[in-house]
Amino acid sequence: MIVLGINYNHANTSACILENGKIICAVEEERFSRIKNDANFPINAIKFCLDKLNININKVDIITYNSDKSKNILNKILFVLKNININNLDETFKLLRKKNSLYDILNLNFGLKYKNKIFPLEHHLSHVASSFYCSEFDEAIGLSIDGSGDFSTLLVAVCKNGKIYEKNRMIYPNSLGMFYQSITQYLGFNNYGDEYKVMGLSAYGEDNFSKELSKLISFNKDNFININENYFYFGSNVKTFEIINDKIKFKNLFNEKKFEELFGFKQRKKNENLEKKHKDLACSLQKKYEEIFFQILDSIYDKYNCKYLVLAGGCAMNSLANGKILDNSKFEDFYIQPAAHDAGGALGAAMHHTYNLKNHQFKRYRYNSVYFGPEYTNQQINKEILKFKEELNRKNIKICFYDNFEDIIDKTVSSLISSKIVGWFQGGCEWGSRALGNRSILASPKIKNMKEILNIKIKKRESFRPFAPSVLIEEADNWFENYVDDPFMMTVCKVKKSKTKIIPSVTHVDESARIQTVSKQNNIKYHSLIKKFFDETKCPILLNTSFNENDPIVCSPIDAINTFLKTEIDILVMENYMLVREEN
Image 1: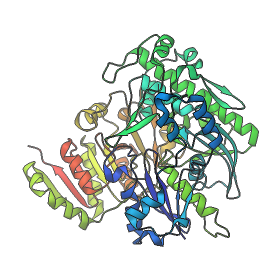
Image 2 (image 1 turned 120 degrees about the vertical axis):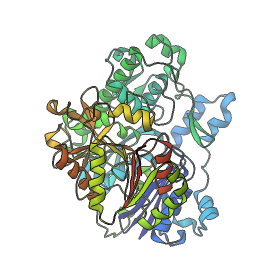
Image 3 (image 1 turned 90 degrees about the vertical axis):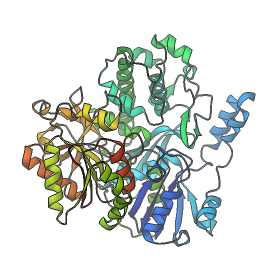
Image 4 (image 1 turned 30 degrees about the vertical axis):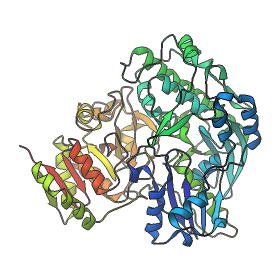
């Protein structure tokens, strides 16, 4: 049984294939298009998935996608009638129109013959399914929270005996995700997905805007979230973003005049300096988010009395809140699928249809691996290196090949100890938004100014944003407080007081870190590299940041070489090849 899952008509379009219940491949379109958070139809991602199995689309048994326009239709009609405006009639009624026919798109691009293979699945149900069916839990409470999808912003479900039973739902515009996004925009971070920047900034501020934020949003035990629509435009406008030149552009989500009166300062412009008031608002925003998030968790635990949680949706990318779940809720354990944002809806839709087939005998797995994207052989890598040979020679970059991978490990560790920055390209590309040791930039966490060096030489990003540590799972307890085994880098925890000065470049200003735990079972090469670094330095940790500059994480050898050449990465390791900048 082959099931193709697709996420489209959202950001981070993606595709995956399950064969007899097992993930064979999963990848976002942005990895191929090189457009960050790409919202275009995932032609390349689908092609990769089909090529991986060496099949054409007519060999697929089921095609499914994470949206169902028929859901919440009455709420949509009432919203349209309430907010009808002669100036935005066209946009308003787009809400009720059918999306582009998936069959027509697949027929045109892949020659799909049969319409009856295509099945929709509601947006939030897809999110919950993506985490539940990837977890080991036989029973769990499923929670999906995001900006909106299929005119809904939150879903609570009971997941039991392989089935998902919807229990409660929040309808747009009462949205915790849109609230967070609005304040993010007010703070001058206007790109899609910039909420993670506010999370990093929040550590520098104080909670001085709690009262003001309480006027914008509140918790209600029955309805979960109440938004004060007087302060927001998204409560009356159906279209909050548009795609211009293949990039997502947000409309203004809030009433600027009322926000200025509330907070006492104007919206920060993109390149303006960050002042204390901005940092304080970021801190208060994160605190308010967590306050409501944990109230939701308390409410659903008390109502359904299940000790396990599966979490998904864009809000599940809030790693600060995720790291506090066990300390601030009654849940004993939780699971978050690594592509918890919209990309993961493709996987959820595919898994839901797979595990709800009549008489299916497919085994469920707990997925702690993410390496479902394209991978390349040494022969393929050599072919791509040769295309750059003249430029590499001109820039005094030495090309080395090592038959024994242990030599690669030894030379890489020696370079890291010598303060070198390494681009690390191995195996399959990661699924989800984190680089987890196959498409990573690595450095020693022991070097105090490594964060500044990385920002100057490569990342060219805001100085307040932290870098993350990858730690050997067997050593994590010696270095971090109240951590959870997290191979996906989805939670933040505290660095032990005795260790903060040893690993300064991955310890945030509040002594926190968003960790990735690394085991032999999940990534033997990456584990071996960190283990060798541990043997040499007594530190079982590497600084790990995504292998990119300001574009999507690299996917192919060409992407990696291009990034290597346009930045000041010292060494590029691709499988058994090393490209080394020679000292002048």
